[in-house]
Length: 291
Image (tube, rainbow, N blue to C red; front, side):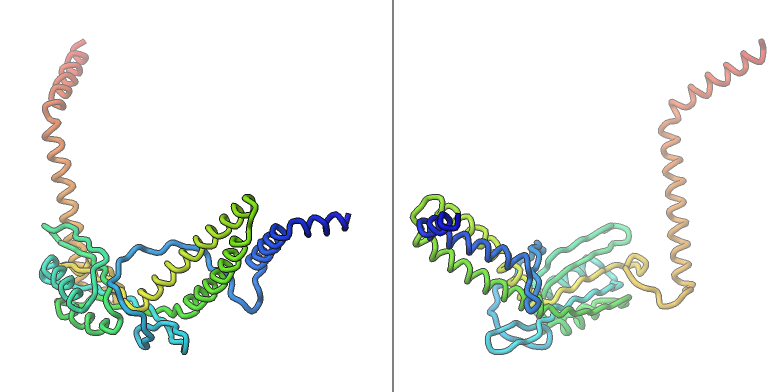
């Protein structure tokens, strides 16, 4: 039995090498080393379009990993709730200011433009200009209801992706060498399948890597605008505020009057159908009482 196996291996050296490489890759992916990070899941990232920027190592607001030194990569995100005199005008000024600072708008919403207009904007701009942008945006407000600034360190995640890419590139190079030596059609097809699978993994990781780089370079700001403080997301600092209670009571009264008016309008519209039914019922009751 052993002689047959040895004889088969001698006759199919290329296939044997290919099988050993595949077994090595499967075991390596399924049994993580205690010294190496676990494989990252392939996830889809939000689609955002960034201006073309040069890769450089920066500190403070965000940074990249380069070959000579490791800098922290911090993604910064801020939330602003602003009371403004004119929502549409403030919205346009924020977009114009963002473009002047080298940023761009991700999305923008405008609701109830006739009564109590509210707007939500999400923008991206260079992280080094975040403080300047927040200062300019707050100048447009009658009142800053709430402000939040947070940062997330993505250095380790970025490093893990780079290490996985190095491994995948080396593995792909080995398979390309095997492809050059392959002569059997079955071997060629099998190697091609592995190369396609490796390329898909590489493309996914490259996309994640670029997204992290841009996220560290461009800070994200979400701005809520309204002429009414109650329409904005905020956390009350006091347990009881008479002014807020009064506004809520007035709003509730207006909603109640609207509901009453709606019911009245519906009743008037259906009155031509209701009156004949009432008349029939009245005459029926009157005739029943006589009998």
